[in-house]
Amino acid sequence: MGRAPSGGFRRFAWTREDHDLSEWFDGEAAARGLDLVTDAAGNRWAWWGDPDADGPGVVTGSHLDSVPDGGAYDGPLGVVSAFAALDALRATGFVPARPLGVACFGDEEGARFGVACAGSRLLTGALAADRAAALRDADGTTMGEAVARAGHPPLRADPAALRRVGTFVELHVEQGRGLVDLGRPVAVGTAIHPHGRWRVDIAGRADHAGTTLLPDRDDPMLVLAQVVLTARAAAQRHGALATCGKVRVEPNGVNAIPSHVTAWLDARGADAGRVRAVVAEVAALAVRSGGAVTEESWTDRTPFDPALATRLSALLDDAPLLPTGAGHDAGVLATAGVPTAMLSVRNPTGVSHSPAEHAPDEDCAAGVDALVRVLRELAG
Ligand code: HGY
Ligand code: MN
Ligand code: MN
Image 1: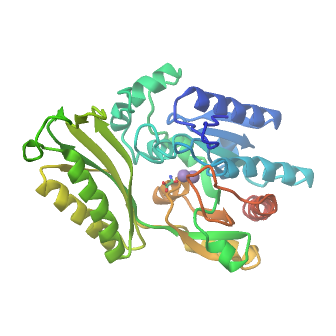
Image 2: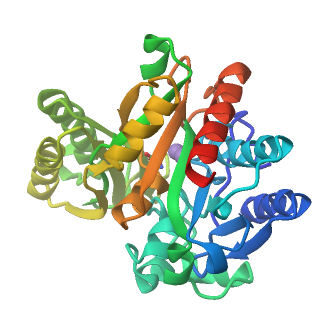
Image 3: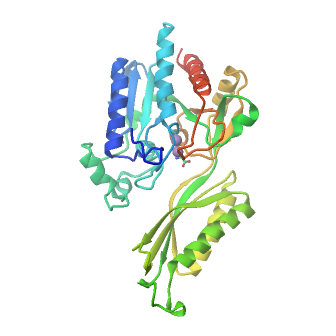
């Protein structure tokens, strides 16, 4: 679903593709006799057992939305593995001592409205409902309008849904190549590195590309070029990561000097201070040139429950304990105080957010086996 001409996937929140994926999820849950709940933030939960009566429960899952031209595994591997793990547990006659849930979080990538983990952040209250509703996509449609068109009530936090989660475990394809160098198929997550998104607005003066003399130009593309190069140089110097993967040029005409350029900076790294230093250098340059920088989201270093991580690593034959630079709904739940763990499945090239993203079937199967053992340990 949502296959793009690139061979990758384009599954944005509150679109037709998203609707089709939700129907798929609901069908898989119904086929297993699981109780389906959609929470007030638009996330979907499929329960084996009643978390309100016997909860809180043990939940596993991930997301189904994607970045533009994303890969097949980022998100879906965690949801599919969750269903497969429940099937494997049932096949052995396992009956959970605590309710077991499969979660599908909405709008994890923030590809359409710009805020990552929007579904889980709305759920926990980390993203205010009114701010979310007012977020606009490239066409100017607000999230509130898109949600209404999809037939869902206005999104808001859902403390009751959050209380049903006693422990959350997210299985996710590895985004980076730590495991291939360690020769292991599965790792246990220790933390998510600090990361954020900043919008850089650069005004120029629209004019004719073929007649305006160079000294008379106010061309924002020149500042954009400096922003991109400064971000990379500062990241190099500070031992961080940074890129501008999304740019909007107005009016975006070949023969028109732009009136305005907007760039989005994604900066991350193991040390929050270093990430902030990179952003500060980019912001100083942009502001010096008359531009403006707005922080759109920031996630500080998010440790997963260390006792739980150690326990799961031991359970999984001393699976490696690795941090990640990728943001996840698991990080949002951990920040909300839910005991949370992550399992990552080997990605031989480490490539992600690309049609080339891949995990070999045998490693995906190893991920399901690990998840079965974890769920048996936590819900048995
Ligand atoms: O951007 C991320 O780190 C995640 O894939 N949402
Ligand atoms: Mn992703
Ligand atoms: Mn993901």
